[in-house]
Image (tube, rainbow, N blue to C red; front, side, top):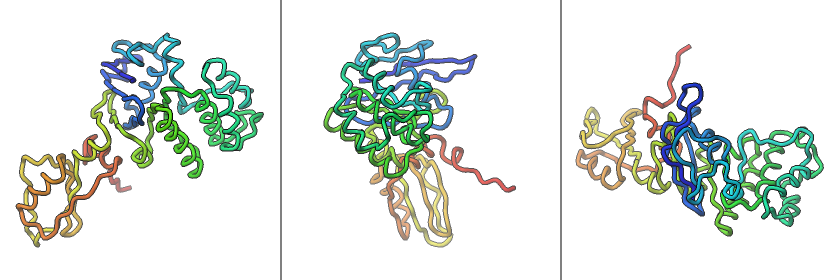
Length: 299
């Protein structure tokens, strides 16, 4: 298990992390989401042992990861700016990775030649961004890490290769118990693969729950009222957002769908329907509802 406890990191007086707390259960996929500058990449650099915490703890299986080679050997990461030696080929980097990871799977490396279809003697810096990302997955997944940490992992990949990469990762989660922590702005994609979600903002984790629990605790309702009879909703309902088009009103309400629906039905709407929220919608409204929504600007 990965644990981040009260993590603080400051750069030139700016608090990049301000007491962040994260718990990543073993054997699943954890999605770390948040707006630009929330601190996601800074957390990842702590998890991989690049940064030393100013205060707080970053634990892998109960031990600090910074300057701990034994625990670092359990981790493999693909950052947004994946590093490779300037003149290295894929095969050169394979030898480099094999030297650091005793469990490097050479047979898997050979099998993946058919999956990624990139000549292994290609100089990586001459490849396109998408092909470089494919090379990163090719090498990293052959390390057979217990914990796979990803920052914008499929950025630059075409749709077919995105599906291929996710399929390989989910296979490792299912068959080998690999734990994946992934930071991405593609919330629609995360929604299909994540078991748990942490929402970050301003250096802190605001919410951390299983995806199912997160979706159960916020509901979208559409209601049609009689002309001129749209009610003022009860104060005890925590309404995050209200909008309407004609007589169709849309409410985003914190709470469980059956309870919220029952309260609105007392006002006798002509039509009332509870709809599931996407992870993207939950993200927007948990970060401030209308205050975080897209603003229209007249030019």
